[in-house]
Amino acid sequence: MSFPRQLKSCWAGKAFTLIELLVVIAVIGIMAALIIASITNTARDTHAVLARQQAVVVQEALNAWIAAESSGTRSLQEARSNYNAAATGAQKLALIQNYLDSSTRGNLTAVGNYIRSDSMIMQGNALSFTTWPANGSPSVQLSTYTPQ
View (cartoon, one colour):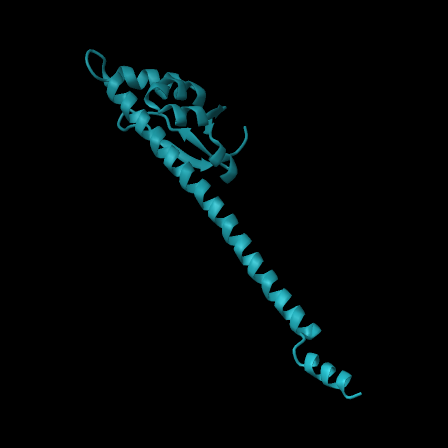
């Protein structure tokens, strides 16, 4: 008859209490939340880096277009006139599209005066072209997108 008591006392010390199980579940939940937040932030940071890289690529394409347009018999003033005559972002993108690689060109979409890509949409950003002043050069700016 003492056998059930020995069995009971043997198993009683090896079981988890409800409190211990709740603490373990809470710790696992907190760790999972931190991991998910980290993954989300990494994805957001990746989109931000890609948007900045695309802005640099578009600026380099614009610089290459300016160099090509102002070489030979054409003047810098002609290139400036052609650039400033392009009123929208789509028209300016059309000017430089031959200086963009196919991957970048395929990811860019003109929306009014803005140029957007999937990464920029995820960030709420867009590219815009500045006007070309007589004493400077045009630039591509990555800024917050405001629908027109």
